[in-house]
Length: 516
Image (tube, rainbow, N blue to C red; front, side):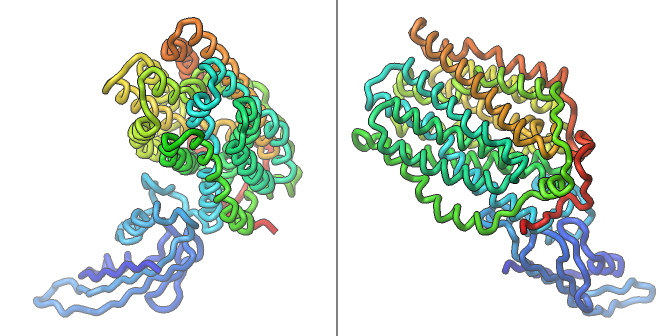
């Protein structure tokens, strides 16, 4: 267990403050004289003790003073991800100001152990999905060289991969009947199997077909873990939870970049990258024994609450997702081909480039989550989306240091847009409709992606320049940014039931009802 041991000289007022039960990062309860334990909070074990020794002070009228030793022993209940939070939580527990307040790394609400465990498990699955979700995009340029196909075949293959979302999108409605947990586990295992089949693909078509299913499943996974995490956390932490899911998925995507240099070792070496997900199976088995169902689904299911979709809201959110995908999908998935074919990058150069331009995003994501929860979604989302589109288009028209700077700004701003905008498809729809809505929006994203890939592929062949073809589609996210500003409602710091009055209200929304 971690220990914080501090001795200080205090007056009566400060001593009273130290003897007050905490209600900020956790809820304390007395467990003997000057001893407290946790009754609610993100800890597997917790105890705080005071040892008070009066200090004799000289002079008449002087205030009494005490030498106080405060010893706090604790163990975070954040499986696998506790190092991410440990130094921040240690700093927070050591502070003498225990006023409940929003921190840049933690919400104002006390978050239960069940909730932190669930968020940790979802984040781990997000890492797996992040790896498998970007695999085809990161390796297709090497597979194309191995199979001897042209740029338009690459674009068409990536379009085919997007069609794979049709399979899970048609199944996501089960999440509204059977729960989030069963589909999350089933999608993860199936995605691992179909991803691994890419290692033995005999042709570009076979590779595209296997990864179409795998990519479809990982897309469904992103929808499910976002849905589950935003259902679980308090109102003031939804964007922060999406930030964490985005970071964990980004960590998974970075794993691909770390192992990608193996593609330079020998002909066909890119295939080994598809075998890595098989290592996830033991971890998935462990998670399956511990992952609970979301509290909101448990409540809505027991009340048989209606799941009526507001089709105006759906048209708003789905339309924005479709239009944005016209540019965002080809701009991200064809980046490696642009770097290798038009900039002359090797696999190692591409890995270095992708890692370098992505590093600032790891800071931008949590910062954006805090800002979105504190100040609102709309302005942050619109500015980040529009700025990312401009910088991305410029990066495809640049080389040298300008390319690196523009790409870095593009990735950073795109990452900042995710915590602000991703939660809308959960927040604006009732609990027993969120799976269906997520599946339908995934379909619209796929349709936009396919159209974007086909258009970019044809333009790149006609113009003989992939960068120009991608940049010509930058109008799409700029249109989305305007739509967000003009038509999207503000959802920050409002409970989901405010937008969906047909759902049962929850008392302590940070608590989790365990899956029986």
